[in-house]
Image 1 (cartoon, rainbow, N blue to C red):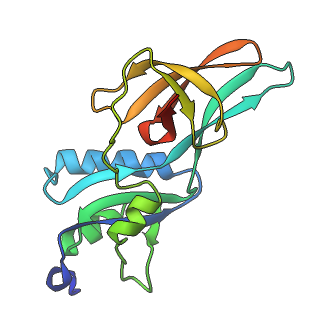
Image 2: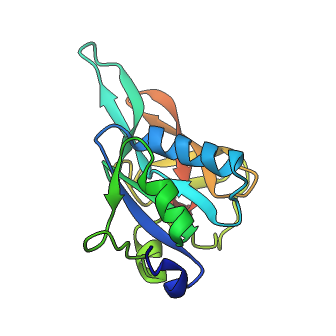
Length: 179
């Protein structure tokens, strides 16, 4: 028996190390376990951060694909106790938590914000049709027009004209600014 219960400081972000290529499977399994065991009061969020990348095939066709920012890692916001540690640790594809030995170390709030896991409030409100400039990522410096905004305003689809084509690009609201 560990002393996780005595050290519990509420919900924090923890990093789970997985086998390469198992990130999405681990995320899906955690979400199913939370639903099936009714653990939503202990495990709050699971993320596999990705970024859009434009690739070109041999014929010169561009395609946007998502690339994992932190391969082999899954981020989970949870209350660390014996039960949650055991559940996560024994999911197929999980090799362990990041931390010394078997002791998981939570991310500080600053670390979570710095690696874009903990969402910063979106200060700018955007509208469909707004002209914007991409300020982060591989399309940084490109301009486009907003075509769609998620309900919570955190994800925005921007139509970017590149190489004579209009490409819809899904971006985080923090990645754009008004022109």
